[in-house]
Structures are given as C-alpha cells and as structure tokens.
Image 1 (cartoon, rainbow, N blue to C red):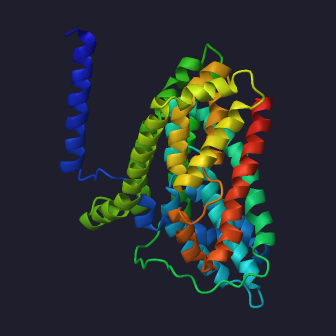
Image 2: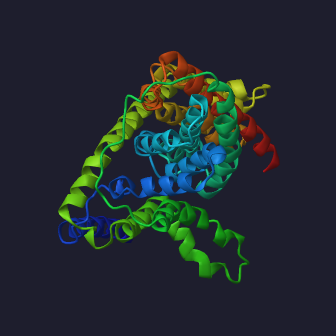
Length: 402
C-alpha cells in the first residue's frame, strides 16, 4: 500500500470512530432532518410573518415564508409542516373575506414550496443533478434563486387570482398535528434555515477575491461542500432551536420519528430514478439524444426539460424525473457545451410539469386545500405547469445572459 491508501484507511477509520463517539457519548442522533419540525421553529416563523402583514398582502407573505422554510426541507415535509399553519392564518382573515381570497393564501404557500423544491439546491433532486452533470453548486443556487423568485410570484399570488376564482373549498381533510413544544425565537429559525445556503454560496467568495487575499477565504470553499454545510447547520440547529434540552431522549426520539418517513421516500425515489436511468442509458437513449441535439434546432435545455416532463407525467415523481434525466444528459452537455448549471435548472423545471393523479403530492395538496379533484386540477396542477413553463423560459433567457 502507498501513502494515499494509508491516508484513505485512516480517514475511514477516523470517520467511523467519530460517528460512534458522537452518537454514543455525545448522544447525537444520526438523523438530523427534522429539527425544524420537532422544535416548531418553522411554525413560529410562519405565524409571526402572517400575523404582521395586512390581509391584502397575505398571499405574498405566504409565498415568501414558504420559499424560506422550504429551502432545507423535502416538499412533502414542508407541506405537512407549513400548510396547516397557513390554513389557520387564512381562516383568521377578517370577516367577509371570500373563499377565493383564503384559497389564494394557501396556493401561494404551495407555490413557494414547489418552486424551491424544483429549482434550488440543496433539495435532493437538484443536488444530485449538480453532481451528475458536474455543475458548480454555488452558481446553480444563485441562478436557481434568480429563476425561482419571479416564477413563484407569477405562478403563486398572480395566477391564484384566476384559478381560485369562484371556488369554495370544503374543510381540509388533513389537519395540523398537535404539538406542545415551545417554539424558539423567530431569528433562531431564520439563522438555521439560511445557514447552509449561505455556507454553500460562500464558496464563491474565494474566487472573487484578489489573488493576494484569496487564501484567507479558503475556509469558505471547504465549508461550502454541501455535506459539510448541512452538517454545520444541523449541529448549530441543536442549541439554537432546543437550547439545553437538545440532547434529551424525547427530543432525539422525535427527530428519528419525523426524519424517517421523508428520508425513506427520497431514498426510494433515488433508487427508482437511478434504475430507470440506467435502463434508458443501456438501451442507447443517451447516444440518441446526443445525435438529436448535434446540429439540430432543438436547444439542449429544451431537450432536457422535455425529457423531464415526459418522465414526470409517466411516474408522477419530480425526484425520479430529475435523477433520470440528469443521468442521460452528461453526454449532451459535453457534446454541445451547454452550461451544466442551466441544464440542472431546465431539468428541475420540467420535473414539476402538470401534477396529476399518479403524483402523491396531488392528493396531499388536495387534502390540505380542501378542494375537489376537479378543483385541485384547476389550482394545483395549473400552478405546477406554470412553474414548469415559466421556469424554462427564464432558464432560456438566463442562459443567454450569463
């Protein structure tokens, strides 16, 4: 064995030993994906924001809160966590507020959750697409936010004025889970939500600095690794959200319970998407796409979006659509020279096209909105389609400018 082999073995053993020490002696739970749910911090942030805004601005506040809270959360987790709170705020709007106006507040919230789920890492789909296509994570996040904000505005509060008109939804079939946890201060939740995003984006600072001072910012590049950034944010979340009770057994057990369901669903989606991708690559579809994009009038970005749309419609899963499409696009990216960052975003936009009955999210949203199946098609499905189409248009414009 050479020195590199010995270094690898030492790193592996050190990592395992550290994990054991942190779990056994430090009493840290190995799954940290549910800190905001257990602490009720996200709920406190949503309530505070919606309480401060006037009734006419409620849809806009709902969109903003959902986009912030949705940055580090799986879509389904954010939906279960946020929508009951938003529904309560909508129900508390002044007497005489129409059903359509209350529904607009809810639609703005699901728009915010969906648009960051599709377009902004560190969500699992975009993050894996970044890795597969060799895209720069910091630039992808910045471009994704630039696309997500105007897309959310149009597909959320503005479109809801049309799609919610005349609808009178019934009582939501799903309600918020009871919680007796005292939520942390709002500023603590904001720090926890934004910390991984800021760390990942901070990796670009070293490249922007003059050569003489750039070495002093090298630590930012190290901390911008998505795994390390999420680890730092999770460790910081324990004292920020739970204070001295962070290591109590009930808290650690609740984190385990809340984290397993969404994590399991994501792992299944990743496995399914990887398997489907390999079948399509093995049968030669990736080579076919290279030939189709070579010298043709079809933009590689439109091609990536269209493939993701087809897989989304067939499987009902945005994550499967993203992972599968990303696995077929590296050869196209290499052959055409198209930006991998914008390709990631085109795939993400296509992955949410027209949610319908084979999408579990369709029924989850229906349950929380209290709409009929037809009403869910009219609101949620149209909202998702608007995100997809608007997202593609902005990606095409952005790819020409940057």
